[in-house]
Image (tube, rainbow, N blue to C red; front, top):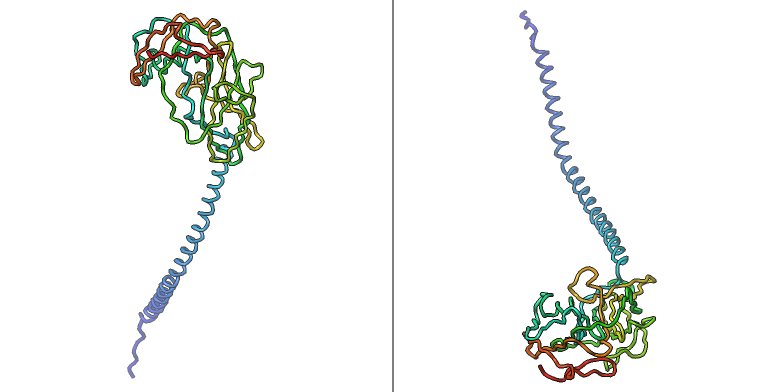
Length: 316
């Protein structure tokens, strides 16, 4: 009987086939696990992203609230009001100067010039002193969320000397644009031992004492006009609004001349007339509103009332 000899490669071949079958099964299981895991992974990523986006706005909102609160605290710690130029005061009509007593006849007063060294409004501010009274009009805007109360006006850095003399100057008429709402008007005699706010009379003179009681809520605005009078001296000074807001006291310096810088911005000047109403030179300007000529005025053509206020009835 013929016997088939055993196959010497059978065992290794079967072992390899078993291993290959196991490997293929493992690969199929891995592929199945991989494809089944993708939706789970995507779901986890989406869920995490949604959760993250849900947290981010909250964190951004919280940070924004912190920033707003800090800015609000800084804002509330500052001045409770903002001042801008008012429209109800156009400056004095007469000026006096010891520096400009030289002959100015024939020169032209430039209504729009910004040169302080030739006849113009900046020239008046630099070299001349308002006669009898000066003043300011400001729009006061309330910034604080709490009610702001303007309680008064304080005079500081007051220095006085003998009345200025030399030359007398009447400025060109510049009209009055008027305002939509009547401003809160006050007057002060700066030479008084204790200057207090007074009513500004229809005659343009200080009247009886009055309290300043201007109340503003946040965003409210009111124009305030104040005129300062001197009856015997030539004085320089500064003035501040006295303000109360949420129990705190503030002082806001009033500008004497908008556009100036440093202390010149806040320093007012005013002089009483010379004791004998005598001036070396007297000037007035014509009615040409673009370039009025400066002319000399005889002393006997200037009239003075009992309050020491001049007037010039003539027409240059």
